Length: 178
Image (tube, rainbow, N blue to C red; front, side, top):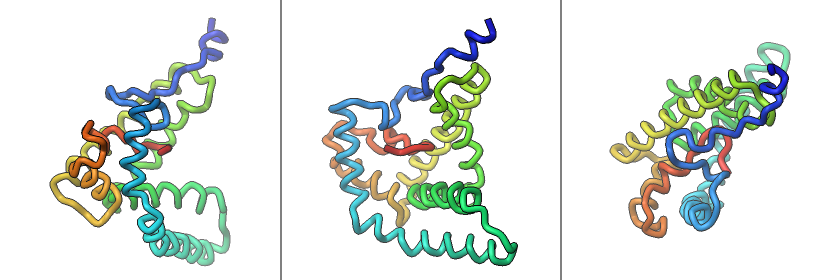
């Protein structure tokens, strides 16, 4: 029945392309990837983001003053985290507009009870995010930047991931990183 279909809990698409999101892995894989990420996400590296985050917030607040209103959720809560994730990943500014719709679609998988259409949209969102991130990783492997994704790839390639390989690609930094 339609009611039964709507009440079915649809599993989050954690294995869209054959690897799992960090939030859905168990030791020892989870430990290996967390160890790799800890080498890159040091307090100093995270602190280095502060000026850029402050600049983003200042730009949003300046625009709000010009408009004469501020919606804290829409203007800050929805924008700042996504922009910070894009900064961390080294996503070109011209591509950042794509992340919000992909992320919105993908995170619907975590709503609990969802229908088949919503599940399909969530999987499509995950596929889009992960496909883009795969390309970004390959681009960063060839052209290193001054960003945390490049540092994560460098740590992986230097063997800091315990020798298992694939750390950067397997750390699906999609809509919710762990």
